[in-house]
Image (cartoon, rainbow, N blue to C red; front, side, top):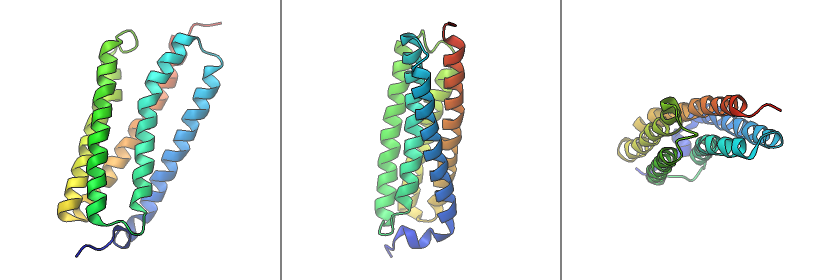
Length: 176
């Protein structure tokens, strides 16, 4: 029984629409904030903002794309599970590269909590995302709750990190 995801996910439709709209709205706000801040910041502060906001943008984009993916009417469980597993692996590799980048440029990442929130927490989220993909491949609907929880975690993590990035840049920026 292959079936498509859209028929089984009818009850989840509002959830994925809400999370997807929140992700795209917050993504837009991050872009607006970065564009406005870039005009007032020094080159060093711009580099800091870029290094802080890029992982956050990746989290919002991952959340948005997955919400859109689940809404595809012809998507099968096999394809969804495989794509989520691949997205989890790619996200994990990206989060590991963020961690390595933080380790190389210690002047921006002196605080352990920065490393926790910008690299380690996303690593956990992307492991959960890959796990949801595996669970969807094996049990179909059993993986939907893990997927939903993971998307909420990615969204909340993105909100926290966007706020922290803006506050960090403002506090570290030289006053004019």
